[in-house]
Length: 259
Image (cartoon, rainbow, N blue to C red):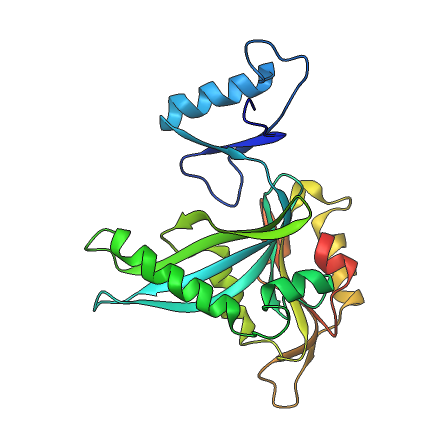
Protein backbone atom coordinates (compact mmCIF):
# COMPACT_ATOMS: atom_id res chain seq x y z
CA UNK A 1 0.00 0.00 0.00
CA UNK A 2 2.95 2.32 0.53
CA UNK A 3 3.57 2.19 -3.23
CA UNK A 4 0.06 3.42 -3.98
CA UNK A 5 -2.05 0.27 -4.18
CA UNK A 6 -5.72 0.99 -3.49
CA UNK A 7 -6.36 -2.68 -2.85
CA UNK A 8 -4.57 -6.00 -2.78
CA UNK A 9 -5.44 -9.65 -3.14
CA UNK A 10 -3.89 -12.44 -1.09
CA UNK A 11 -4.13 -15.83 -2.77
CA UNK A 12 -3.29 -19.30 -1.58
CA UNK A 13 -0.17 -20.68 -3.23
CA UNK A 14 -2.39 -23.46 -4.63
CA UNK A 15 -6.12 -22.90 -5.07
CA UNK A 16 -9.09 -23.81 -7.25
CA UNK A 17 -11.65 -21.60 -9.04
CA UNK A 18 -10.60 -18.51 -7.11
CA UNK A 19 -11.88 -19.99 -3.87
CA UNK A 20 -8.78 -19.41 -1.73
CA UNK A 21 -8.30 -15.66 -1.91
CA UNK A 22 -8.83 -12.61 0.28
CA UNK A 23 -9.26 -9.03 -0.91
CA UNK A 24 -7.72 -6.29 1.23
CA UNK A 25 -8.65 -2.63 0.81
CA UNK A 26 -6.40 0.28 1.75
CA UNK A 27 -7.55 1.80 5.08
CA UNK A 28 -6.83 5.33 6.21
CA UNK A 29 -7.11 4.25 9.84
CA UNK A 30 -4.56 1.44 9.46
CA UNK A 31 -1.56 1.69 11.78
CA UNK A 32 0.90 -1.17 11.94
CA UNK A 33 -1.10 -3.43 9.60
CA UNK A 34 -3.82 -2.86 6.97
CA UNK A 35 -5.40 -6.23 7.80
CA UNK A 36 -8.60 -6.65 9.77
CA UNK A 37 -8.82 -9.38 12.39
CA UNK A 38 -10.57 -11.91 10.13
CA UNK A 39 -8.04 -11.22 7.36
CA UNK A 40 -5.16 -11.83 9.74
CA UNK A 41 -6.81 -15.09 10.78
CA UNK A 42 -7.18 -16.15 7.13
CA UNK A 43 -3.53 -15.26 6.46
CA UNK A 44 -2.26 -17.23 9.45
CA UNK A 45 -4.34 -20.24 8.38
CA UNK A 46 -2.99 -20.17 4.82
CA UNK A 47 0.60 -19.81 5.97
CA UNK A 48 0.11 -22.66 8.42
CA UNK A 49 -1.45 -24.98 5.84
CA UNK A 50 0.47 -24.05 2.68
CA UNK A 51 3.55 -22.19 3.88
CA UNK A 52 3.24 -19.40 1.29
CA UNK A 53 0.79 -16.98 -0.29
CA UNK A 54 0.80 -14.69 -3.32
CA UNK A 55 0.13 -10.96 -2.81
CA UNK A 56 -0.74 -8.78 -5.80
CA UNK A 57 -2.39 -5.40 -6.43
CA UNK A 58 -6.15 -5.54 -6.88
CA UNK A 59 -6.81 -4.49 -10.48
CA UNK A 60 -9.87 -2.90 -12.06
CA UNK A 61 -10.93 -6.08 -13.84
CA UNK A 62 -12.79 -5.81 -17.15
CA UNK A 63 -12.80 -9.47 -18.17
CA UNK A 64 -11.04 -12.76 -17.55
CA UNK A 65 -9.57 -15.03 -20.20
CA UNK A 66 -8.34 -18.61 -20.16
CA UNK A 67 -5.84 -20.12 -22.61
CA UNK A 68 -5.67 -23.90 -22.82
CA UNK A 69 -2.56 -25.80 -23.91
CA UNK A 70 -1.41 -29.37 -24.38
CA UNK A 71 2.23 -30.31 -23.83
CA UNK A 72 2.93 -33.14 -26.28
CA UNK A 73 5.08 -36.24 -25.91
CA UNK A 74 7.60 -34.71 -28.34
CA UNK A 75 8.12 -31.78 -25.89
CA UNK A 76 6.17 -29.27 -27.98
CA UNK A 77 3.27 -27.15 -26.76
CA UNK A 78 -0.01 -26.64 -28.62
CA UNK A 79 -2.56 -23.89 -28.02
CA UNK A 80 -5.91 -25.69 -27.85
CA UNK A 81 -8.12 -22.61 -27.55
CA UNK A 82 -9.03 -19.43 -25.71
CA UNK A 83 -12.18 -18.71 -23.73
CA UNK A 84 -13.59 -16.04 -21.47
CA UNK A 85 -14.79 -16.87 -18.01
CA UNK A 86 -17.12 -15.11 -15.59
CA UNK A 87 -16.24 -14.29 -12.00
CA UNK A 88 -17.97 -12.61 -9.07
CA UNK A 89 -16.84 -9.33 -7.54
CA UNK A 90 -14.12 -11.15 -5.60
CA UNK A 91 -12.70 -12.99 -8.59
CA UNK A 92 -14.23 -16.41 -7.89
CA UNK A 93 -15.23 -18.55 -10.86
CA UNK A 94 -18.92 -18.54 -11.85
CA UNK A 95 -19.03 -19.68 -15.45
CA UNK A 96 -17.45 -19.60 -18.86
CA UNK A 97 -18.40 -18.50 -22.35
CA UNK A 98 -18.62 -21.54 -24.58
CA UNK A 99 -19.47 -19.63 -27.76
CA UNK A 100 -19.36 -15.94 -28.84
CA UNK A 101 -17.32 -14.68 -25.92
CA UNK A 102 -17.25 -11.02 -27.04
CA UNK A 103 -20.86 -10.41 -28.08
CA UNK A 104 -21.87 -8.52 -24.92
CA UNK A 105 -18.65 -6.50 -24.54
CA UNK A 106 -18.36 -2.75 -25.02
CA UNK A 107 -16.94 -1.71 -28.41
CA UNK A 108 -13.71 -0.37 -26.90
CA UNK A 109 -13.01 -3.73 -25.25
CA UNK A 110 -13.65 -5.63 -28.48
CA UNK A 111 -11.32 -3.27 -30.33
CA UNK A 112 -8.64 -3.84 -27.70
CA UNK A 113 -8.91 -7.61 -27.99
CA UNK A 114 -8.75 -7.56 -31.77
CA UNK A 115 -6.26 -4.81 -32.56
CA UNK A 116 -8.74 -1.99 -33.13
CA UNK A 117 -10.92 -4.44 -35.01
CA UNK A 118 -8.26 -5.11 -37.65
CA UNK A 119 -6.56 -8.19 -36.19
CA UNK A 120 -8.91 -11.10 -35.55
CA UNK A 121 -6.00 -13.42 -34.64
CA UNK A 122 -4.39 -11.12 -32.08
CA UNK A 123 -5.27 -13.26 -29.06
CA UNK A 124 -4.17 -16.46 -30.78
CA UNK A 125 -0.76 -14.93 -31.54
CA UNK A 126 -0.39 -13.53 -28.02
CA UNK A 127 -1.19 -16.79 -26.27
CA UNK A 128 0.72 -18.82 -28.84
CA UNK A 129 3.82 -16.79 -28.01
CA UNK A 130 3.05 -17.14 -24.30
CA UNK A 131 3.02 -20.92 -24.68
CA UNK A 132 6.44 -20.81 -26.32
CA UNK A 133 7.75 -18.81 -23.34
CA UNK A 134 6.10 -21.15 -20.85
CA UNK A 135 7.37 -24.44 -22.29
CA UNK A 136 11.07 -24.17 -21.28
CA UNK A 137 10.01 -23.25 -17.74
CA UNK A 138 8.11 -26.50 -17.22
CA UNK A 139 9.66 -29.65 -15.72
CA UNK A 140 11.42 -31.70 -18.38
CA UNK A 141 9.11 -34.68 -17.87
CA UNK A 142 5.85 -32.72 -17.86
CA UNK A 143 3.22 -33.83 -20.36
CA UNK A 144 -0.49 -33.02 -20.49
CA UNK A 145 -2.92 -30.12 -20.17
CA UNK A 146 -2.15 -26.61 -18.89
CA UNK A 147 -4.53 -23.71 -18.38
CA UNK A 148 -3.29 -20.11 -18.12
CA UNK A 149 -5.65 -17.48 -16.71
CA UNK A 150 -5.25 -13.91 -17.99
CA UNK A 151 -7.01 -10.62 -17.32
CA UNK A 152 -7.94 -7.42 -19.14
CA UNK A 153 -8.09 -4.45 -16.76
CA UNK A 154 -8.26 -0.66 -16.76
CA UNK A 155 -5.51 1.56 -15.46
CA UNK A 156 -5.78 5.35 -15.69
CA UNK A 157 -8.58 4.92 -18.23
CA UNK A 158 -6.56 2.68 -20.57
CA UNK A 159 -7.14 -1.02 -21.20
CA UNK A 160 -4.24 -3.32 -20.40
CA UNK A 161 -3.59 -7.05 -20.46
CA UNK A 162 -2.14 -9.12 -17.63
CA UNK A 163 -1.22 -12.24 -19.63
CA UNK A 164 -0.51 -14.49 -16.65
CA UNK A 165 -2.69 -14.47 -13.54
CA UNK A 166 -2.37 -18.17 -12.77
CA UNK A 167 -0.83 -21.24 -14.37
CA UNK A 168 -2.75 -24.47 -13.76
CA UNK A 169 -1.00 -27.68 -14.91
CA UNK A 170 -4.21 -29.71 -15.14
CA UNK A 171 -7.60 -29.85 -16.81
CA UNK A 172 -9.45 -26.65 -15.88
CA UNK A 173 -12.91 -25.14 -16.25
CA UNK A 174 -11.63 -23.49 -19.42
CA UNK A 175 -10.98 -26.90 -20.96
CA UNK A 176 -14.53 -27.95 -20.09
CA UNK A 177 -15.80 -24.87 -21.92
CA UNK A 178 -13.77 -25.68 -25.02
CA UNK A 179 -15.05 -29.26 -25.01
CA UNK A 180 -18.65 -28.06 -24.82
CA UNK A 181 -18.11 -25.61 -27.69
CA UNK A 182 -18.31 -28.27 -30.40
CA UNK A 183 -21.76 -29.24 -29.11
CA UNK A 184 -23.19 -25.73 -29.71
CA UNK A 185 -24.31 -24.15 -32.98
CA UNK A 186 -21.53 -21.71 -33.86
CA UNK A 187 -23.86 -18.78 -34.53
CA UNK A 188 -25.25 -18.91 -30.97
CA UNK A 189 -24.05 -17.46 -27.69
CA UNK A 190 -23.50 -20.09 -25.00
CA UNK A 191 -22.46 -19.88 -21.36
CA UNK A 192 -21.74 -22.76 -19.00
CA UNK A 193 -22.44 -21.69 -15.42
CA UNK A 194 -21.68 -23.45 -12.16
CA UNK A 195 -24.57 -22.70 -9.81
CA UNK A 196 -23.80 -23.13 -6.13
CA UNK A 197 -26.76 -24.70 -4.33
CA UNK A 198 -26.33 -22.48 -1.29
CA UNK A 199 -26.97 -19.42 -3.46
CA UNK A 200 -30.35 -20.63 -4.76
CA UNK A 201 -33.49 -18.88 -3.53
CA UNK A 202 -35.55 -22.05 -4.20
CA UNK A 203 -34.83 -25.71 -3.70
CA UNK A 204 -32.79 -27.23 -6.51
CA UNK A 205 -35.71 -29.21 -8.00
CA UNK A 206 -37.87 -26.08 -8.33
CA UNK A 207 -34.99 -24.07 -9.76
CA UNK A 208 -34.11 -26.74 -12.32
CA UNK A 209 -37.72 -27.21 -13.42
CA UNK A 210 -38.23 -23.47 -13.84
CA UNK A 211 -35.02 -23.11 -15.86
CA UNK A 212 -35.90 -26.04 -18.13
CA UNK A 213 -39.37 -24.59 -18.76
CA UNK A 214 -37.97 -21.14 -19.55
CA UNK A 215 -35.25 -22.53 -21.82
CA UNK A 216 -36.57 -25.62 -23.62
CA UNK A 217 -33.92 -27.55 -25.48
CA UNK A 218 -33.80 -27.21 -29.28
CA UNK A 219 -31.32 -29.18 -31.38
CA UNK A 220 -30.15 -28.57 -34.94
CA UNK A 221 -31.88 -30.54 -37.69
CA UNK A 222 -29.19 -33.25 -37.67
CA UNK A 223 -29.43 -33.57 -33.88
CA UNK A 224 -25.70 -33.01 -33.37
CA UNK A 225 -25.63 -29.50 -31.89
CA UNK A 226 -27.64 -27.41 -29.44
CA UNK A 227 -29.45 -24.51 -31.08
CA UNK A 228 -31.29 -23.09 -28.06
CA UNK A 229 -32.14 -23.95 -24.47
CA UNK A 230 -30.54 -25.25 -21.30
CA UNK A 231 -28.74 -28.52 -20.55
CA UNK A 232 -27.62 -29.61 -17.09
CA UNK A 233 -24.16 -31.16 -17.05
CA UNK A 234 -24.77 -33.01 -13.80
CA UNK A 235 -28.01 -34.28 -12.30
CA UNK A 236 -29.53 -31.43 -10.22
CA UNK A 237 -31.39 -33.70 -7.80
CA UNK A 238 -28.20 -35.59 -6.95
CA UNK A 239 -25.97 -32.53 -6.61
CA UNK A 240 -24.50 -31.74 -3.20
CA UNK A 241 -22.54 -28.55 -3.87
CA UNK A 242 -23.25 -27.17 -7.33
CA UNK A 243 -25.00 -27.77 -10.64
CA UNK A 244 -23.48 -27.08 -14.04
CA UNK A 245 -25.84 -25.74 -16.68
CA UNK A 246 -25.14 -24.89 -20.32
CA UNK A 247 -27.40 -22.09 -21.60
CA UNK A 248 -27.62 -21.40 -25.34
CA UNK A 249 -29.40 -18.43 -26.94
CA UNK A 250 -29.18 -16.09 -29.90
CA UNK A 251 -27.42 -13.51 -27.71
CA UNK A 252 -26.25 -13.13 -24.13
CA UNK A 253 -28.92 -12.30 -21.55
CA UNK A 254 -28.77 -11.36 -17.83
CA UNK A 255 -29.43 -14.89 -16.60
CA UNK A 256 -26.46 -16.16 -18.57
CA UNK A 257 -24.16 -13.46 -17.21
CA UNK A 258 -25.27 -13.22 -13.58
CA UNK A 259 -27.17 -16.41 -12.86
